[in-house]
Image (cartoon, rainbow, N blue to C red; front, side, top):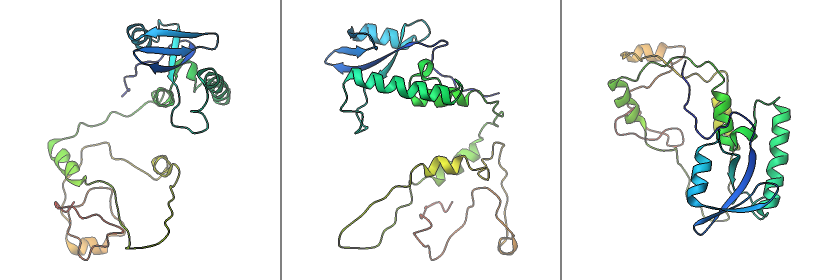
Length: 211
């Protein structure tokens, strides 16, 4: 059974401290009082969540609705959100033990029995690396007022779709004739080495190795 090695997670609920860096010091608020730690003490406490009295959350600087709040108000905001999440999930998502969203998600992921993955062979690694060329980018020449949009969480929604499958065993090298391709009712999951003529760049991105 595969497990992700996680660090920075406590076995029991801890007191939460919201912190920010001020010069070479760490200023924090834990719901009761403000404090100031040296960098050495902060790193020591943060690296040992099981024995430390606190878990540390960095002051939010990106979310426009939260970043303007003081350490004290951000602490209050965190406590409310964390308590709601804990109750709604019957304790499965407990940020009083995991602190960050990332560690909360990974900690939950680790509760599943994951299949043993076959090691990637050299020929597979070479093929996979030959496929990487960045994202699909395409646009029509245009002059005028511009707009932009973003599809929220489209990538994770695809990942959780029951029809989205990822092979976990060693792949097989196979050769297909053109007639087999033409007559195939569907294409098997895999990486195909083909040459695409008259490429529609809205659908494909040209790769020199033709994978």
